[in-house]
Length: 299
Ligand code: NAP
Image (tube, rainbow, N blue to C red):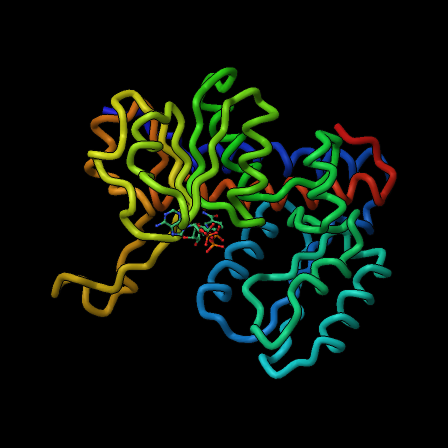
């Protein structure tokens, strides 16, 4: 039976460490009036985004980051959202800016992400930060891939020379993760919807990261015994049983957890795996950006 890579536990440890870093620097650097500040720019009313934004705000509160939300209606113009971002770029109480995706298709998301000051880009999606990642230079890293790397590190997973398969090539997850794994000396294949014989690729992988957004894509017959499985997918399954009626249903990932768990050496659960680590990395990036902006020496 696989060992679980517990994202909740590790995220709680990160939070404890960030809480003490913030308190310590506020106490010693004489910047009491200047706690770290994160602003989420949200456009429209995507319900899943509402849940994520609330969770991020709660996590900020737990560690001592001041957070606020600028919520534009779905009808907001590109110019209106850009103006919010420009104001935040010049706001010294705001150290991190996160443009909550997805935004309505009427707006140009790339242009909005490009408008964020790269030193406040706590989602790590500005082209400058993605370029720094490519070059292996220090910079703010994309939260979900950074969270996956932290989980693997904490689980003691050896990456050097490992055959890794990442399913999914989005800018948010698959692409940056493929680069991070390569930089850790794994031999990486990145699969996508045009990949032929995906099951064969999976069976060869010693590390399998699934970020396809397809519930239950990977089952027991796709994995080799002893594989390390990281499931990035999150899907809300509506209530199936009569006793679940009136509840929000359950969450599941891209991997058939109960079928794959007996075969794998390590596996992330959904929920409680990658999700909490994504939030933890957002907090960590915000504190990093704050430390730079307030010229407090990073711990
Ligand atoms: P995305 O932008 O939709 O990208 C999905 C990727 O998977 C694409 O590259 C697509 O290929 C590939 N793909 C789709 N179906 C496939 C298939 N049958 N076989 C192989 N590849 C396939 O999604 P995303 O933003 O990367 O997110 C992926 C999943 O992770 C979603 O479930 C999302 O909710 C979840 N997520 C979780 C967290 C977290 O914190 N846990 C954070 C972010 C995302 P093409 O490029 O060819 O279209």
